[in-house]
Image (cartoon, rainbow, N blue to C red; front, side):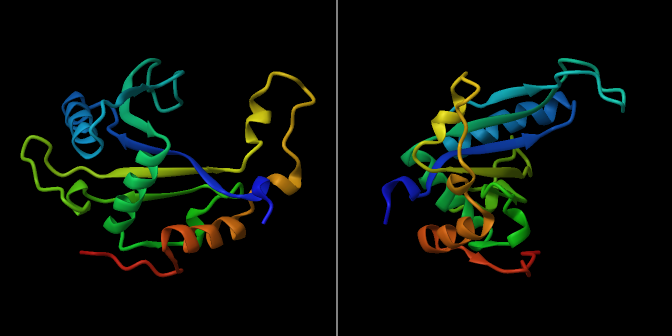
Length: 174
């Protein structure tokens, strides 16, 4: 196989949306620290929304993992959803995302009354070698269409590398 066609995990982003509730935001920051061992970043609104949300309001918390720790966390998070993902959770560029309803579904996590019950989203960004070309500031620096990752290829990679069961039906745990 051509090494330039090899698919890899670029990053895994863990996101907790909290609206504007300061108490939930503090619990979310604490939860991210507990499940990843690293401090999260507080996310804010960038501009006024049509629903009345003002600029620079704190609305959530996130963290980005890369390298071996990203794959390790991803494998644990997939266990929380029984290694099942719907094909609709893959986007047209091959990335995929899923939600964990409660952090206590993660292997090894126990209920903490300081956190309560919170869930989070896991977003997995995939890449191939050569994708950093698109980060260049040159206009001619583009990734060719054949080098992009279609969803079908991404699904096959996830089945093989991560032992994910991609099915239309995802059973609810509760």
